Structures are given as C-alpha cells and as structure tokens.
Image 1: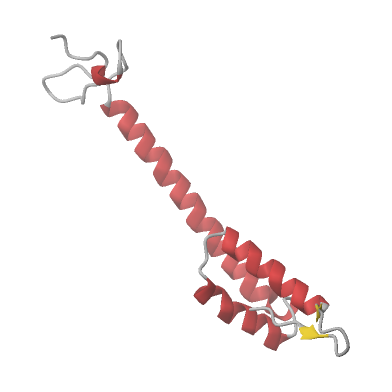
Image 2: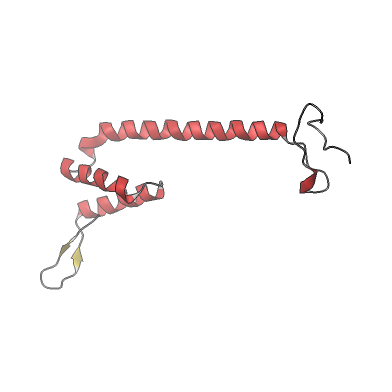
Length: 113
C-alpha cells in the first residue's frame, strides 16, 4: 500500500509525511478488522484528495455509521446476555447443574435428580 521512494545514492527507502500518514491509517483500519482489499481504495481516495482534510465530511459520516453499528452490537450482546441469564438457572455444585428454564422447571433452581 505504501510505496516510498528510494534514495538515489543509498537505495534506502525514504518515507514522506504522506507515506507515514497512509501507513498509520492502514494500520488503524487493520486493527479495526478491515481487510486490505477494503483499505486500499480508501488510501487511494485519501491520496487523490491530498489528505484527510478534504474527506472530513465523508470520514465524519463513516465514523457515525461505525459508532451506531458498534452501539447496536453492544446493545444486542447485552440483550442476549440478559436473555440467557434469565433462561439459565444459577450453578449448583458444577457446570452440569445448569438447567434451561421451561414450563416444567423452576428458572431459579436446577432440577433435582
């Protein structure tokens, strides 16, 4: 993704400020779970726009969607945890003492054997 120029005499890579920006952006997106195939077009847009400032509106919208998606996932996980907490009886002497609540079992206590 980042293709720094080479120093003409030493052959060393020379990273410009834009190269560093692109590498950091790609790194953050990878940490966020995005695939390189998804990141490459975004990096190309940032480069063609001359940086992130011209893309600020798009990035704000993207951030808002990402935040809403994250909140929805957390809400769903909390609802699932609450549902499962109501459906499972508290533990007794071991993990096999969990009971699924049903019309014939008490949701508070494991069934007696």
